[in-house]
Image 1 (cartoon, rainbow, N blue to C red):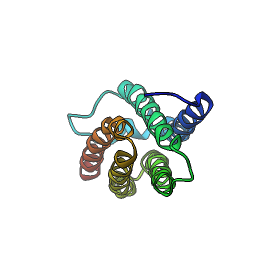
Image 2 (spheres, helix red, strand yellow):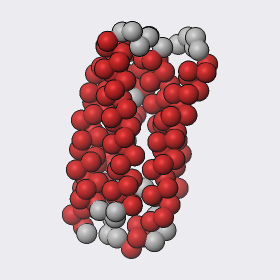
Image 3 (tube, rainbow, N blue to C red):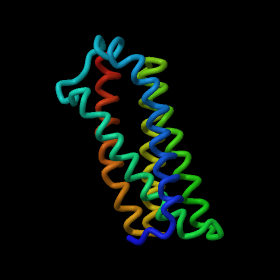
Image 4 (tube, one colour):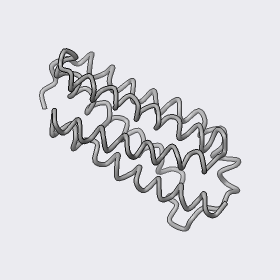
Length: 158
């Protein structure tokens, strides 16, 4: 992987990390209150694992989006791919708002289904332009798949 434009790479990573930071605003207000009292399945990871996982995933998203963006916005497929990427990034941030902000596992579950579909579309479109960019998003879809299952069980238990 060749980095042609470090500024563009840093910007792409910063945008993704910013989405995570916005989501964490909603999380921080509820994780030590509401989240502690709801019923959760036995396979729920400890709270400390979520921040490093998400920081890593947002880093990978940033690198992946940079690899696509670096191919040039004159390319129609690049523009389409990045639009889908932005949609999934918004859906990602909205999940935290729905789950922790509104304290609604139901709305969060609807959102995570849409997010999962959007991530699949991003991976497929990125793979066409850069196999590495697509591969970098595989941990993300795996984690969101797990998060979707966790969300479903929390919804059922509450």
